[in-house]
Length: 80
Image (cartoon, rainbow, N blue to C red; front, side):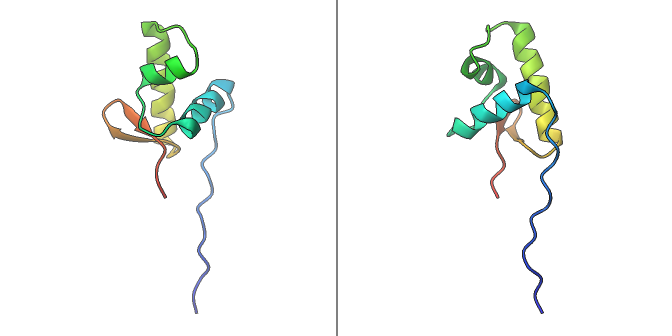
């Protein structure tokens, strides 16, 4: 008797529009991205504060398993 393949439930996404925007950037990306590249894709001002805040959000998404950090500072969507 085999059990059907069950996908684990998706981790909850933080309830802020910025996270939705970040995931939209990764949905269009064909390669891993750095925080600065995510800021550029979101048409944010390229300032250290914006880059650092984006990096913190990317780290939070990584902790929840929504993104993966393939090497320090380089983020992508995990592949199934």
